[in-house]
Image (cartoon, rainbow, N blue to C red; front, side):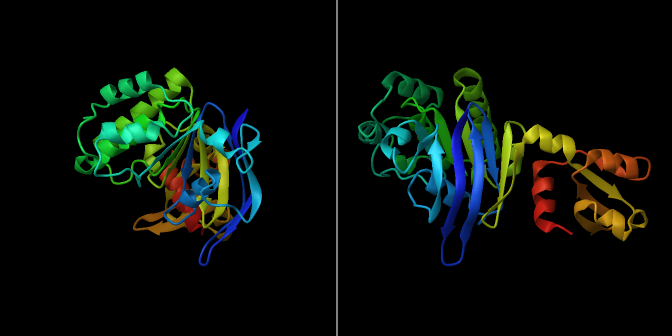
Length: 284
C-alpha cells in the first residue's frame, strides 16, 4: 500500500516550476527526498500538505485526495521543519496547550514520554532553546497525535553532527517500534546513507529517479582511472564524468559493464548518495 501517490503535479512560479511530478511513497518505509537547494523539495512538501495548491495534478494519501479530505488526512500527518512556527515568548508547556487543541486525537501520555525522552524543559521559553532542542520539541508534538506519516523538511539543517546522528537514531527506532512512514527531505545526503529505504531525487523541479536505495547502490559504481582508458564510446557509458589530477572519475549505472571494462585497470568503488546526486546533475 502507498502512503502517498503524487500524479502529474505541476506548479508554476515566476522563476521556478515543478514539472509533471509523479512518485509514490510506500507505507511503512523511510523515503529520502534529496536534491540541491532550490530543487523544489520544500515546495513539493507544501503542495502535499495543501499549504499551496498545484496548477494541475493530484496528491492522494492512503488513496484519498488531500484536496477533498484535508482535515482527516492532516490529522494523520506529523510535520517537522527547520522553520518552526512556535510562539517564542511562550514556554513549552504553554505552547503545547495551544497546539493540542488543534488535533482531534492528542495522546498526552505519549507526549509526556517524549518530553522526558528528549529531556525538554517544559517551563522554559521557546526563545531560549537551541535549534536542536526546538527540533526535538517539534518532533515530540508531531509524534503525540497518533500520526501515521511523518513529513520532515530539512530537519537536520544547521544542527551539529552529534544531534544529527541522534535524530537519525530516533527515526530508526520509530521505524522499528511503531512502523511509521517517514518522508525525509534533505540536501545532506549522508543523513540518508544509513536509514533510507527509498530515495527520490528532485532536480530543477523534476523527478530524476524514485528508487530503492539498495538498488541504487547495487547498480551504480564509481570508476577512477587513467585518461588513457577512455575513448568517446566508453565515455558515453558514464552517467557523469570529470577530470582529476591523476586521470578521471566517473559514475556508471551498470556495475557489470564497469567490471567487464575496468576491473583490472581502474579502481572501482561503491558510490555514496552524494556521488550519485553529484554526477546525475553534472552529467558529462
